[in-house]
Image (cartoon, rainbow, N blue to C red; front, side, top):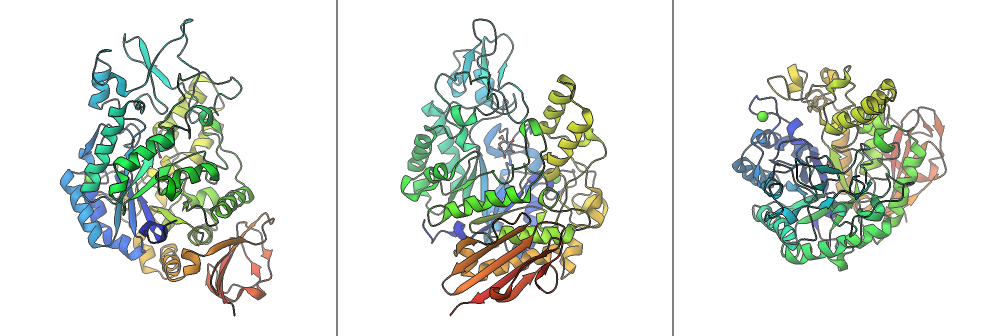
Length: 551
Ligand code: GLC
Ligand code: CA
């Protein structure tokens, strides 16, 4: 691991641009809105923004369906706005990380539009085609584990189906085709040359598919990913080529791979500096602990959550450098997901922030989590407008007649909409996000939970985040120290130590509502607490951080 790189110590702030800040009163967040809030981000203490897609897109999947990689979506701004954002962010000493959506394009991309015209199209081989089977059934039995739908679609009288691991509006690119790969490399260079500091590479571990696209064994219809296209060995050849063609020439830029389903050994294949592939990876084991197939909500176990995080922290031990995140644009709100967004809203939001931000790794905060934004809980299920929520409803309620109440409950708990409704800036109409009715309904609780109130309050969740980030930056034990567990078998406590030279930091959190007792005698001085003192009784969702100087 190269310790000199900026991203090892970074706190990255993820922005879903449509919902961050609307600058021109059309109800849609935009790039100018982000520029207007750079001072806010600077005051929070973040070093980089990860910007969800801002490219030209019909926006069927939140911009993860790109129609033109060289331009900006009209609703979000212009190319000039993007150039200004890069420049202004840099003046604030904030880096910009864009999305590279390279597994698929939008069906509105001119490559695909041309490819469906005829088999002789120059772009035909940019995508993945397969004939139906002799008995007339689909080319293979792959299904999306997210929605339970087939990954094959046929257009008009064209005789072959095209593959789409996500919606049918997102055809998968054929990475076996060298021209496709070099198209992507050129896109990367274009943005790097504009000053972008890195990419978060969307589902990059799925670009390589098993040759022949074989059927999966019937008994594992949802879990074929790891066998046929997730972390499929050839992906490493592609990434190594990408490194040689692009990344090697931009050594100060970061490449973060979204690599669901990786084991620590596989993560090392992606990020070992000697292998020349990626710098950082995102893995999802801990955030998916309560997510079943087809959007089913399972019970959340703090113990399983902790075990998963500890597993990865231990695996890092001198070998790996991981990113740490509890929320994202694809997940429910962290305080609702792992905490208690009712009576213990403030306490549990602070407790979660503490256990996250003091772990070892590159930190990612999802916008709004720094003020404890909650799941949205719209009264009408039709207000959940994300394509994934819609498909889950369609497939489970309309096609399969599952109990509507259960499916609605699952959607409310896990929907991506929870992360995508407008940011709560103040208690004015539309939460200060826009002057008009926004593209997505605001959460009614904005009059209580908003930036403006919390900026004014010393005890707020926002002030607490600032304190944690400052603490993180001032303690080498947190930035680079070792990680060790304590009280590992306790079902409710989340406790660990970070050590560097003679400094030992101990974090003890109670993830439950029940009072817990812990002997804190040898931990040193309590330096951070979400209650007031840090005594031996841990109240509901209490967290205390201790610092000790060892002789
Ligand atoms: C990733 C993104 C998600 C998107 C999907 C398809 O999982 O995080 O938002 O829908 O890829 O691009
Ligand atoms: Ca706007």
